[in-house]
Amino acid sequence: ENISKALPAIHFLTGSDVTSKVGTKPAALKVKPEYIQGLATFGENLSDENCSKAEVFLVQVLKSGSKCMTMNTFRNWMYHHSKSAQISSLPPTSHLLTDHIKRAHLATYQVQHVLDEEAVTLDPLQYGYMKDPTNDSLIPKQDIRIWPEDLIKQCTCKTCSQASCGCKQSGQHCISFCKCTSLQTNKCKNPFLKESELLEAMLH
Image (tube, rainbow, N blue to C red; front, side, top):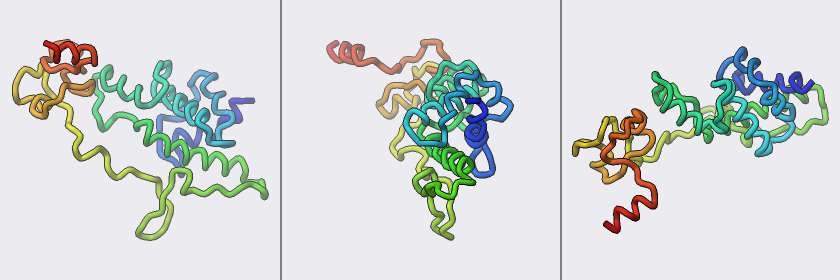
């Protein structure tokens, strides 16, 4: 019964005429029952708990059995463990996924109350939509700025031993998204230092 209640949520979360595609319907139906049952109240209210359950469900749709609880941690896992992973092929961030979940919630609510004349009409602008400035129509809310202008691009070095390393040039240590770290060879000459290691280095 709980699974049947979750079908509208599954439909709109994984992609429909009014929501973006995230995973596939066959993959969604193969997700473990406990994750599907967690969507039974999706569409009733947009609580933090329901949003979290929707995010975990979508992670399972993309990678069944994953231990990741957020899309951000799953993106990080994909980047470091998938041989063919590229930035452009990674799933959306948790921040962007929030608006997708809001739109799916709105669509689920509308389907659930389509015959309810007393149902409250929800404002799409509060659920992941914005007005197109050119014609005043509703379009999915978007973050135009993909990353901050002063964000340092991750380096593509293998060992970061040369002065040409982008991180070295900017005076920054390498991070988990740099190629040297993703290779997992521990040969980076400019590794990110933990707070205790940084303090020790400063003292010496």
